[in-house]
Length: 297
Image (cartoon, rainbow, N blue to C red; front, side, top):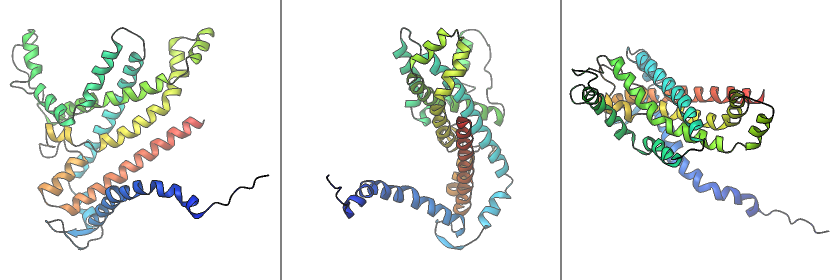
């Protein structure tokens, strides 16, 4: 009987050598910057961004006692929850529709993916033009069809502006959810539905007993990624309002940008970044753990 050759040192280390370039790149572009942000958050930093010494929790204390930060946290929570939840529901419904066979389905799929393929700055600029009171496309369209006679101010308050920003965020997020869910739908074996038809199952029974459970892994991935992307989304809010007036539409990312680059408070900006990172890590972890537990039950 042929004996197995003993593994050499090269055999043992070869797998690690293959992933070494990726590890080096991650260290340079991800781990080192994260470490630098944490260092700045606990340091005294001058206006030039140079660390002068250890500051302990001073930066965090200034941020947490700021009158604006509570509003920024609230805005971030509302922004993230509304965009993620609504886009997930609408994206899944759209995926169900596009999963059916109908004439022009390829064209419909191409139209749906268009908002996702366009940069967020362009999307936000278009929405800003649409809701403009004086020359916006929405007022022009409504006056053309005789629905209104005078221009309507669609953004009378900061809350109204923020609602339009949320609508824009939902619009550009739907395609990602839709195609992620669509990939999960197309991987479901048709034999499940054939067996359900034989048993006399209704459409809703098949939806909740077969479709949703089997597409849930795809939706879980899409939701976690959306939480991260939406939470850190900068272009939409910055393009439409820049977080104004008086930070009434700011989220964490626009607020820390102002602290770092407009107010030259890099230490406080780093503290805000660390707080955002910890919140995001906690939310994503809780969602993943709760989803996996439900899947095991």
